[in-house]
Amino acid sequence: MLLLRRPHYWPASGWRGPFEELERMRRQMDLMSAALFRAPSVETAAGVFPMMNVTEDGDNYYIRAELPGMKADELAITVTANSISISGERKLAVEDEKAQYHRREREGGKFNRIVSLPTQIETEKVTARCTDGILAVTLPKAESAKPKRITVNLS
Image (cartoon, rainbow, N blue to C red; front, side):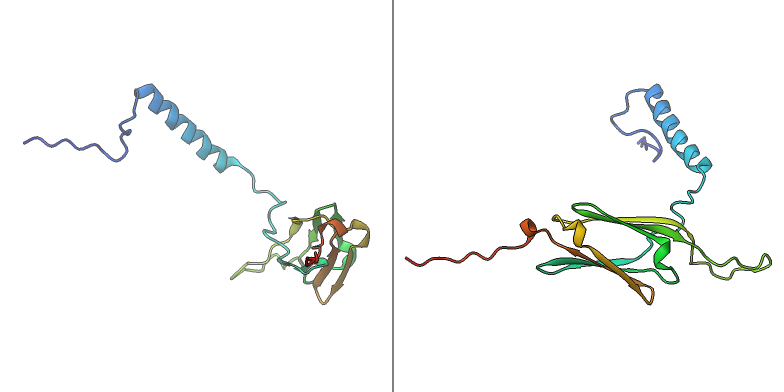
């Protein structure tokens, strides 16, 4: 009895011909080579920074962001009708050239976090303060976005 096995790398049953498979392989190689030669972006070096919590109550949204070591004048906060952007640059002290890292988890660089809010806010009434490395932003909800209590009339 003769048993034929298809190698795992062989095209599937929808295979139309050798040139289609060669084109697919060329596209794969283009993607891999582009990833190899792409320069690391300085903009994304800081990762998801700052870490933040977004909460709300009936009247406001609250954002608390961890920004250790940063000063208020190093931050730029921009608000629109339904979003907030917090940006700046995290600068780290320069290590000695001879320093040998055992672990490197802190990164520096530019950051920009944009948070979209589910409802509109009063942009003129937004307040922000930074205490002990925690940025606290209060974003009042627009009157049209606040929940309305409806009374039911009995008849």
